Length: 387
Image (cartoon, rainbow, N blue to C red):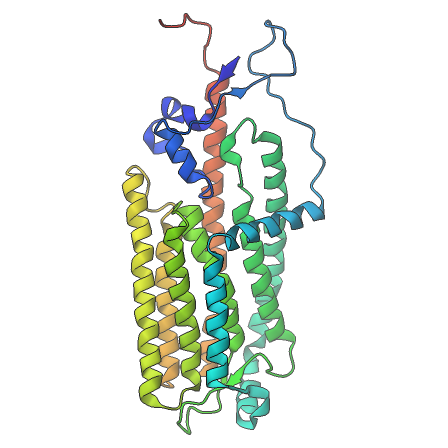
């Protein structure tokens, strides 16, 4: 007996408000299949198990798979990184080139080489326990995402021939493993390092503002993790095509580099020009991200705005709050200590929020797949075939 795949039959089994949510990696194909184009072929149920016509029609064959090993988990994470980097490798190369050129142009002094900066850093080190607590929490979160990646990869291998919608379901948790690992390294360095080798001394041409630590490690972490978050929000959650992600990724990384370089620009006019360009790029990237939501809404008129669009909207708001603190710090309104506390807490909170949203999306997807398969198993196929 043959039945169509769950993605193809969901329109008959459920109304439009309960349709499946598919990973963005293959959502383009799923949407085309829903419209009648590129439909997946029929799935053999019970094939190879029992050819007796009297056998139960809903016996599913699940292959015996070995338990996932650590090598399998590592392979999944590497494959996820390769899939993410493969979207537009050029953006990563351009970001690296711009960062190197900017670093060579401003030539910042290491904080450990400037006495005043070292003194300020030792005062700020009172915030070191925050990084220790966050690092401990990140170990738990990282372990959770690693286990999720392993078992989702195992589920895909066992059931993808029955449920094509399960293809690449392990990519989101694998990418979160990367973000949590990088954030763990950052907080571990803040907690364990004795000297501020990961920071530079500010040079703003003002006796009151010069010689304060600029924690370059934050900016390096953003250059890696923020593109991953944008990929999760745009490609995985909103299922946007790869070409729509390139420009916001480049603009975001460019304004991060420009914002960092403004800390080492004594010329006031040039410094605020860099700050102004950074904010312009932020607003432009945010507008393009909002268009992701508009296009998704147009393609999914029955989709709920409190579902898949939430990561994109949250990232726009969160990045704006970062910009406010950055601008106030530039004028000395916010102290370096308060800035470090804000960045440390928000970096952790943002990744945790995205992780929680993805868990909700994943649970909704798996629930719909189970309901669809249940509807198929209980369907009555004994009636006459219409002419």
